[in-house]
Length: 115
Image 1 (cartoon, rainbow, N blue to C red):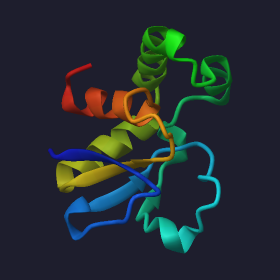
Image 2 (cartoon, rainbow, N blue to C red):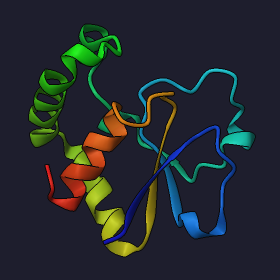
Image 3 (cartoon, rainbow, N blue to C red):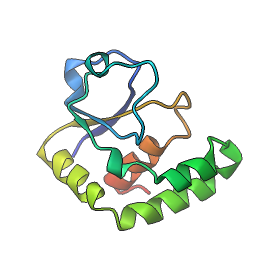
Image 4 (cartoon, helix red, strand yellow):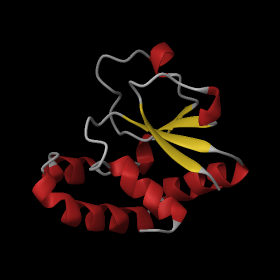
């Protein structure tokens, strides 16, 4: 299973495989055509309550990761994403400017079994 990460604002590449947007909200300023996503799997993103609590405050990063992983344990959308990843290369597409502290990174770690 090969899982990659890419910001939605970066140009797509043929090597991306299936591009899956893993954000609950559509990225600002991005049209659906420009995003070049094959699937928008918003239900695998952190819950609205968790997103609001985190607020992109890096000081909360460790706690956010733990809370998000706990949400994923009971999230049926995660199994759908695993199924897609077993079928071929997928790229988790996200909107965050912070490439080191975002929910797509946690999701990739869970899929890779490194979480």
